[in-house]
Length: 215
Image (tube, helix red, strand yellow):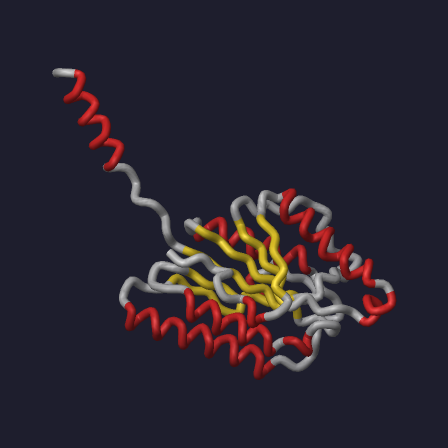
C-alpha cells in the first residue's frame, strides 16, 4: 500500500469520529430569600428568553435557592427538548407552566440563602447533561446567608460552565458602602473561576441578547 493511500485512509478514519456536540444546557437558579423574593418576576423574563433561544436537543432546568438548596426538592422544572419541533414546543409550554405554578404558590420567603448549595446542585445537573455548552444563570443579590448547621466551605467544580449573574440586586447597606457590593461580585467571580468556570454579570435583562451562543 502506497504512502498516499495510507494518508487518505487516515484522513477518512479521522473524519469518521464522533460528531461535534453542539447541544446547549441552561440552568436557572432563583433566590427566594427575603432580601430577593421581590424580584421573582425577573425569573419569568429570563426563562422566556432562554426558551426562545433553546432548540431541539438543548436542555433547561430551573431551581430555587432557599435555606438549604442542594436537594431534589429545589428543582422546579427540567427537560431536554425532543428532536421533533412539535414536541419541543409542548415541552416549552410545560416548563413555563411549572414555573408559573411555582410562582403562584410562593408565599413565604426563606430566612437564609444557600447559594453554594444551589450552585452545587446546578453543577451536578450540568455535568450529567454533558452538553457542548453549559450555562448557569443566578438570579440573586449574591449575599449568602447560611444557617449554622450547613457546611459549604468547599470548592465548586464548574469546568467549562458559563456562569451569568443576573439582576444582582443591591442591598440597603450597599448604598452606604458600595465596596460591599463590589466585594460580593469579586468573591463569586473568584470562586467560579477557581472552579474552572467563566463569569459574567448582566444586571439589565434587556442586555440578555446573545448571551446564549447560537448553534
